[in-house]
Length: 371
Image 1 (cartoon, rainbow, N blue to C red):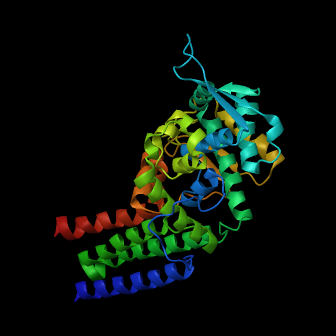
Image 2: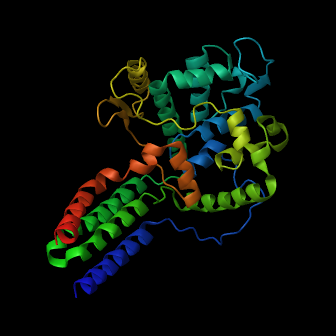
Image 3: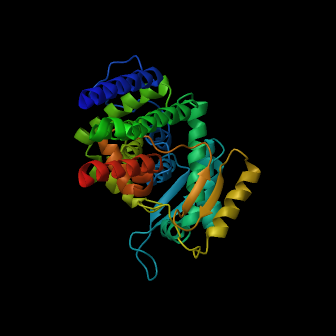
């Protein structure tokens, strides 16, 4: 009887969760197609990438750089190998007369690249990469600023739903509440572990809740078809950065859609797996610099998030701002996210689940080991 009662409760809570999830889910009134053979919109590639993963990732930086090269805002030339210069280094030159028409996040990207890091209208890509590696905290601030700009751009286009983060939090809280039903262990015995497993699954599933509007969901479906087309027929993964002269926006979009690895590596700005735990003891020299930089930018624009560097057991960089944790649309996207941001991808929901897991461990000891 205990097993039947537990199974019945699980069916009820999963059904209620499914109803809540479907009611909150943006459902585009479209028929999915296998392939889309042209770019579905004129959105810049970083905004397209933001529709899939709402955080700043190296592919968005690389795609934005290559897109500005394609549009003639930045010129890029390969320089010969020389002592002290990496093989295949590139010189980036900014044409300031073409920056007035850029979107705010593109202007922010240009500012960070040339004014903040380079300090001139010309900078080598090698110097940018070195700066990103040597200043991880300040680089995290730069990435967050650009992510906020992208998020604001999606809000302005009515492609992002400002209510979605709240809905995700409520769904996550529901999953955690189900996990806490493991407290019924004295009544249901070992069968109460069903609630823990169900609660963890629902909590993790809640992290996939999209933050886009119906229009944004339509675009995501179209870009998924375009992604399949590029992957199956375009062979974009073999194209170097210089191929943008021929493939233009196809190549820049392929970078954020995850099917142009070589081009992304060619013009990659930041490291591909920066784990946001820069210091456990406060020894990194740019911690104060990074916080001061973010504070100075917040004076100019109060919509930017506050930045805190935490030391000790839970060390890392914390932001209290509008950009939410990434939502992953498929197992392939999730695995890609795990490789690039292992801390956020694997440990993000963990604090919600630790206590139910501890309770479950206790009951396992009581009902399995002791008895």
